[in-house]
Length: 127
Image (cartoon, rainbow, N blue to C red):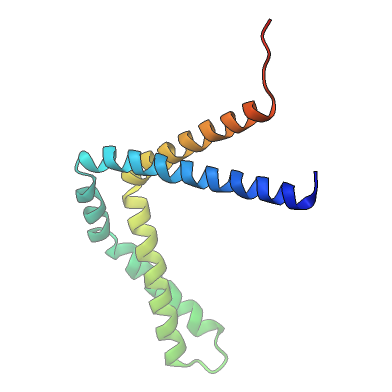
């Protein structure tokens, strides 16, 4: 098998896996959001102020301590980055009840596509 054929085959397989993941995530998303999953996500965003404040404090402190000139701009930038990381982490953690089933749905479809691909490459003959 030439390198070009191998590359083309693997690109098609990767595209098939990505498509399967999107289909699985989409079907699971419809199931989860039908059960009022948006309220869980909005509640997670509302509850993420504490991790955002902690992230801002830690980010400002680290930025201030690592800057040789002890600039307030650096501390402010560190606080903004820390707040963004803290807020994002809080939303992700708070909405894990919604995102978990979506990820499981995607993984289920990917595993089915992988099994099909393996069986196409390695046919099982009974009898």
